[in-house]
Length: 316
Image 1: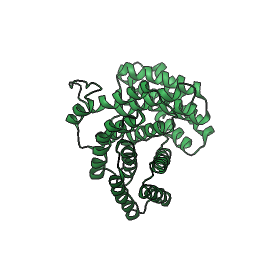
Image 2 (image 1 turned 90 degrees about the vertical axis):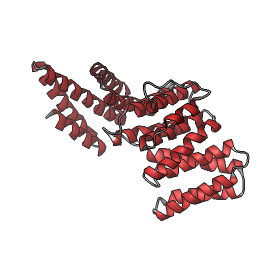
Image 3 (image 1 turned 180 degrees about the horizontal axis):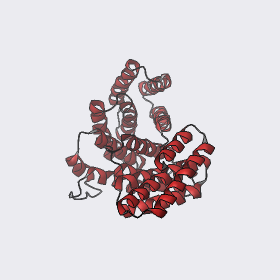
Image 4 (image 1 turned 120 degrees about the vertical axis):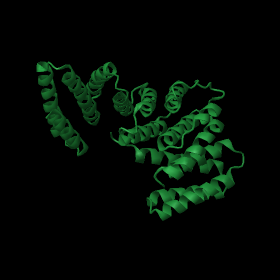
């Protein structure tokens, strides 16, 4: 009964029926409280504790919608404590996703930096084999945080990079230094969609650090693997736009490279009948590239990149 009520609450929340969502979550909480009070079986009690932690995580998203920040954080604190004790890494990653989203939307001083760190940790910890939608939500919300935070600190970006790096390296692998991390990381490159998406996010983090030369191999290889393995063009077009931006900053004469990339991208958008506004935005970028105007091209690609991030952002 408790699980059914918390799922019901999530459905009501998704449909903006916040009063009904609150009622359903409250019913689930009451069921868990009563069941735990009379539970004498250790295994059953463990499952109840995990179920209640999941309820608090779900409930925190309602708190985000209601802008009840402190209540949401208290629920996430309780869920995190239970999941750490149970050593549930994947579920803890989903709690980090919720906390990162809450902080990003609250947007008080320091929240943006902490949100980037938490969302990167959620990408690291969430197992896409257990929940691909949760992994995708973490990815898109990290993209959104990176695109919309006006001035993230270098420290928060470095922490995000390291979290994504850990997710791609085996536990036995030597941690690369900042100087040779690119060479060592690509010794562990896996041609899988999760690895390509994490590589893509690493490239985006390096772009925010203005380390464009280091970002290039991450973005280039991620785009290739996403073209071969991913959802084309949904995964590939944003990666192409980021790579174009990287070339505009990293190369002295990027025009031939970026023109070829944009031609490929525009043709794929037309073939797949993609969003007309995206096609129009790419066409405007093509004009700026044809005019060989760094200023116009960089401005247009930044607008396009931000539009992708906001459009793809998801509510967990």
